[in-house]
Image 1: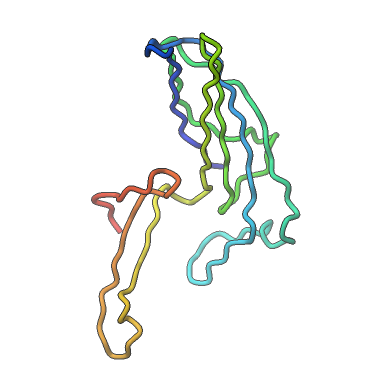
Image 2: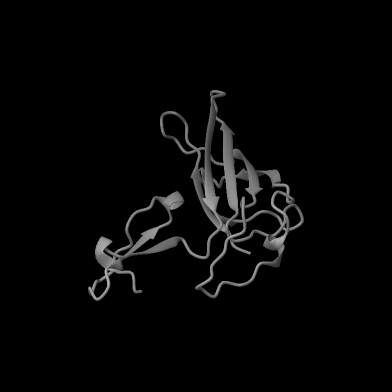
Length: 159
């Protein structure tokens, strides 16, 4: 399965790094509402997605991450295999981080990460006149990072 690159830092309000900080990670996997279909591409067939809608319950869990001596943590993370069903194309992985600072302030952040084949999105857009018969046209191709990862254009992407 895939993983998510985590990078976090714990610091006091004045910016001093706090090593050995315990950060609680709560995660949840939500299944796609309907199976993805692709009649024109060669994606692997996902037999589990062919069942009834809504029959899979989301998987979830909680674990504690500990920062290093410099107050930071960088790791590749994925749900434990025994605590979650395998991630599937179209799922969404929700991550929530919570840390209690030295003055008992609660700092929390959360994000949702789509399960995708790549962190990039490729879009091919035909011009509005492309449906006119015998009129040549040039489609516009854009490559961007996935919306959940910022959505910025990818410069120099080879297509």
